[in-house]
Every structure is written in C-alpha cells, then in structure tokens.
Image 1: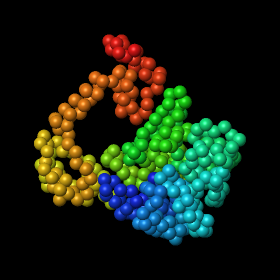
Image 2: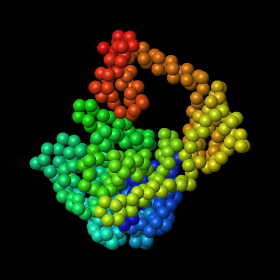
Image 3: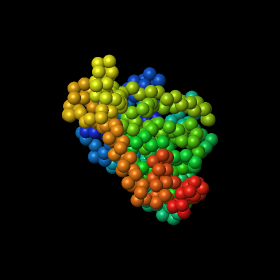
Length: 392
C-alpha cells in the first residue's frame, strides 16, 4: 500500500498582498504527477485545506479540480479539517463524495472515523481525526474527566479500541509534541509556543499540546498544523509540512511530500519527495548596486525579500526592484544606523527590566519556548556567581 501525506495546503493564502493561488495550483498538479509516477493508492490530507473559514471562489475551484482529478485516477483521498477550516463547509457533500473515493472527516461526532482497505498484506485501517477542542470531546464523554487536549485525544483513541495486531494509520491536525521535544515552528504559522513548567503543557496559537505517545498504537501518524516538515519522536510520527513557503522565515527551508509504503505489519518505509515550486521564495542581501548588477540577477520571477546594506536610504527602492524582480515582497535595511537603533532600543529596555524578565525574554528568543522554573533558578545562581546581585 502506497500513500502520500499532505497537510496545510492553505489554498487561497496571500503573503504580503501576493495571491499564491497559481503557485498552489501548480504544486497540487505536481502532487498528482508524483501520485501517478509512484502509483499510489491514496492521499492523506491532514487539515488546513483552505486558509480561511470562508474560502474564496477560486480557492474552492482549485481544490475541487484536485479532488476530481484524484477521483478520475481512482486514487482515494482521506481528508480532515484543520483549525483554519470551516468544518461545516468542508463537510458539505461528504456522503456523496464517499462514492467517489473522497473520504472527509471534518467534524468530530463522538466516534473516531475509520476506513478499511485491503492489499496483498491484508487489512489496513485508516483513522481520521478532524481538528478537535477539549470542549467538543467533553460533549460526547460527559462522565469522563477531561482536563486538557491530551486527555481529550487520548480518550478518543482509547475509545476506538484500535487493534494493535492490525496495520493502523491515523490522520490528525493537532499540536503534537514529544515528551522531551517540541516541534520546530517554521514561522509562517504566525503563532507562538508556550510551555508551562508545572503542567508541561503548551500550545501553538489556540491549539494545546498533545503528546505523541497517545498515538503509539498506530503504524504511521500523518500530522498537520506545523508548517516545517519533521518527525516527532519516532520516524513514523510526522508533520508533512505546508505545501509551499508562506513567510520570509521559510526561505531556507525545503518542502517535500512523504511517500508512505506499507508492507506487512511493522514494515513502514518513508520517502521524502521534494516539491519544486513554480516560483521560489528567497532572500537577497547586499547593496542596491550589487544586487541589481546583471551577473547577480537570477530567477527574477521568484518571490523576493530584500535586505539592503546601503548606508543611505534608496529613494523609491521598491519600484526600482520591481523592474528587475516583479515579485519583490519586502525591502528592509541592515546597516550601521539600523543596528545602532536596535542596540539603543535594547539598551534602554534593559535598563528598565529586572534580570528575571531579561532572562525570560532571551530564553524565549533563543529557543522559542518559555523558561522553566528550574532553568530560571540555575540562571539566577550563575548570575550571582559572576556578580549580578539583582539576580536574586
């Protein structure tokens, strides 16, 4: 059995007022080509189909054409909703779509959706868990003690009575982390990670942390929500990442699509197939003269973030750059003046803040998570040893 794992399509998304629909349509067509080339049996899409709960007409058209093409090729689709999707809109027509091999679970109804398929190795169970909140789960399990999102998802999985002697896959859109690791945030999620030392809970945006061990009964866990492709804990618990780069913070990342090949129970092979966009998203840095010299201009149709190092501001720089790079998204400066302004701002702020607050901010800036009480205690002790009395 061969399956592709997609997530976080965000069809209809704009970045810096640039409509990316053409780029997204190009990549979805590329997914179709990959599916045909590798003769896959199905495609799993782990939520955030659209970028908005009320998608644009063209966004709906692009996804509709993608599903129609899958149906024509007899490739099954297993789709769940994400926190960006409207579960009601995504649910529309789902019973009819089932007949065409399009399986959609957009709203949790108290039971974990399961679709059974067969291949030469026997039965494969594909479970679909749409994006859920703890409050939604409490509605169906009123006698249970559900304190957080992990409790809620663990209860859903346990209630499904997954037979671990069989091959099982689950598709989910939640903030899933390891007991000792947090996913790398790409930046385009436009969210922060928060960790509470006392409860070991965290969240991305409004989505609370779920630990990956609640999915231990599954041979592969197809995750959505985080845009950076990565595994969590074991190789078989994986975020596919977003379809394309959606922010400046991702210019150095590479997008891919996992191809999952399942043999007999316990045999799971994962191959990451690179995705090649019609336009890349890049950052270029240097003086105006350097960047716009003929020998340095490459792939002018790419989406470009410009960092100018000229000491003096360039009049109408955006207009000039768009003559060479029509898809210039942003221009900023990095020179002695901007660095001095940043240093002054940091120094003035530092004078007004206690050591503990500065330490918290620095730790968050470096690691993307809140410092724990134990870590703060160690930092304060180290500060006192080097003569920083305010570290009490």
